[in-house]
Image 1 (cartoon, rainbow, N blue to C red):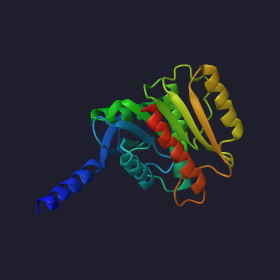
Image 2 (image 1 turned 135 degrees about the vertical axis):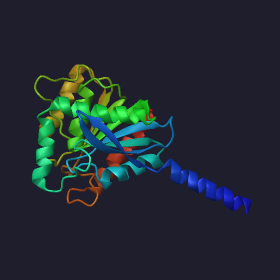
Image 3 (image 1 turned 90 degrees about the vertical axis):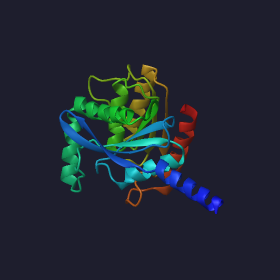
Image 4 (image 1 turned 180 degrees about the vertical axis):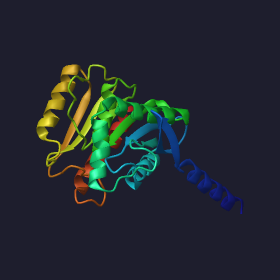
Length: 243
């Protein structure tokens, strides 16, 4: 009887540890709604930036995957509470507004970081990852000089806006890219490699043959199991190295 009770307590503790929650935070007078799940106060933190669909079940699934590996995770919201675009025009409009206003893009990313810190996350040992549009945000945040250990982009935008550079980047940069990506070319990939090397930023960059844009998005026409699993495997290996 005592053994059964102990097992039940352990199960409840496990559920509690990995129970995520929606959390509100503000930036520039607007409310945003992220998703946070903590493994422990000392666990390293992974900040996740969504693609142009907004924060969806996809990012929450990635949070759960990271929790199982022993990392706390905060999925940020870049569009605003309740704003989860479905129509293509809305996705283009919302991302376009932030592409055109990089200061605001950085502000929202910083607000997410600050909220994670306020929740007790270990922001002294943190990385940021981003998918598609989120990869663009991640590299923008890298150029801001944010004090994270690494900035990791999965099939994200790789171009550097005019007037910007990586001279103030504090952490490493990791890129996962598909060579069949028609939205972000291999020329963009090569150009970024030259920029990072010139700026003295430690980096590693991986490509996957036959992988188009958004190759990690489960269930989508662009999903490529081989590239997704290989990039995730290297990503998780990398996390062990950096933490």
